[in-house]
Image 1: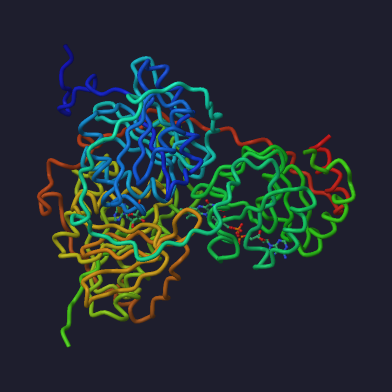
Image 2 (image 1 turned 135 degrees about the vertical axis):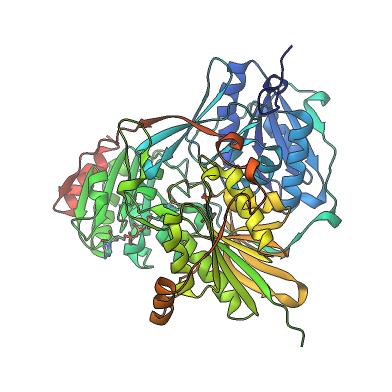
Length: 345
Length: 261
Ligand SMILES: Cc1cc2nc3c(=O)[nH]c(=O)nc-3n(C[C@H](O)[C@H](O)[C@H](O)COP(=O)(O)OP(=O)(O)OC[C@H]3O[C@@H](n4cnc5c(N)ncnc54)[C@H](O)[C@@H]3O)c2cc1C
Ligand SMILES: Nc1ncnc2c1ncn2[C@@H]1O[C@H](COP(=O)(O)O)[C@@H](O)[C@H]1O
């Protein structure tokens, strides 16, 4: 028989790896599938179930997609109170599920939504919650090893949660790669469990007045990226022309996103997405550490910057010192006429 | 006309300046001592948001920090910007606190101050978790709004409406008070501190000081109640890049086409 530890917790009571599947109005955030794929490794090592959690309204399709992506079981909390997302009903529901079912590991996408409610679960359950995890594993005792960059990214700290459960982590989009959907996966009625909804609209303390979703580009899968920074001063045309010549996707630094030139879904970096294209062209980006963290897995990095001392040149394979407004069109013209850059369908 | 007075509490933290931080080779711990200490940059945005609410609603703005007495300069900065008062929450008992006890401490302080709104930054540059604001809200059972880009005070409804940045768009959410608000970094341009406020803050101002005992959380803080611990630190080898600078766009095009061949 196992016994409670000094913190009053019997860690052996906790089992299964949970992955939160984030959806908004039926649309699943790709990070959910990335975490499900990564969670599979953990659950296999622990020889426990991989469980997908879905909270929202009308979730049948999402639940089935989670099974086809490798979840052994799905827990569904289906109610209008959960659509659109709000921190208080999500937090209360997720907390109740954790308290009733005791998972040992919980992975949540490091999106604005995931980072918003994760603390509302971790605090009342006194769970260990590690933010922005970039590497994850379990040791021989089943203890989660959550690694995250610290202080400018040149240090990787391993965060442990020895005496408390669950062991929770948030992980930013693009850090892990999603697996494929397998439509032949067999499942039955028992694979999907509808859980009790513990929240009532009258308990809520917030109200969504309006919600507008525009650009939800997924830059994490892109093979080629042209990213713009504060240096372009709102003039996207030259970079777009370059992007078109090599069939690249547009991305941006946080500075360019904050200015409103480019949507937040295209932000690369510590508080944005992690990308790993074969080609990354940084246009008017200085190369701040928070930016580098999101793109240093790229293949070849090219920098276009008019300041020869910009740090980005040290983090690029090839660079050119010059005005982006002149360099980009020149480059685009040369590349557009080169058959090697043509995309084979 | 009825006048409500809101109490707005702003969490500010002292952090080591940018990339100046090294690792002590003996202990493997971060050598914070060698880096100059500054206010966490996102917290300036939180102060600005608080003061912008005070511009339109009768309010008292109080800055709070949990940290060593050495952190007092961040409170002076907050006073210089326009805060009415400031609290230093300091105690040896806090040593080793992770986000759970930290947010408990700040939650209790906010409660004790009678907060209607707690403002915070998106995240700190040293621990960069962003968990403290939701943690404060969770400990107190309050509403919360994170990644906030604009605030619209609604004193007549006893609510705060805020525009949040959400994946691929925006939403406007109304929250009942008390509410914890974490502002998106870069969205609130901090106002400059007038000279007379700077002089007052540096020469005459003394913060309120609270200990764990004052907040009645003596046994609920520190290393013992922190669920997470650091198991180890590794240096990451920086990604090797060629770092070649070429002269012409044609040279660059040549390198780019190499990627495909
Ligand atoms: C908590 C926190 C989280 C953050 N997260 C992120 C993140 O996820 N992603 C991110 O990117 N940043 C992030 N940042 C911000 C980061 O620190 C930098 O401020 C940001 O990356 C700078 O963006 P930038 O390089 O576009 O702008 P700047 O640093 O202003 O650089 C602009 C560059 O453009 C060049 N330039 C100017 N004019 C021209 C021209 N005509 N032609 C060519 N070049 C020109 C300049 O020489 C300069 O190098 C974060 C910061 C904090 C505090
Ligand atoms: N020790 C502290 N004292 C006061 N406020 C804090 C403290 N730690 C965090 N905060 C607030 O919480 C925000 C997010 O911090 P973090 O969760 O540590 O990334 C910061 O921007 C501050 O506004």
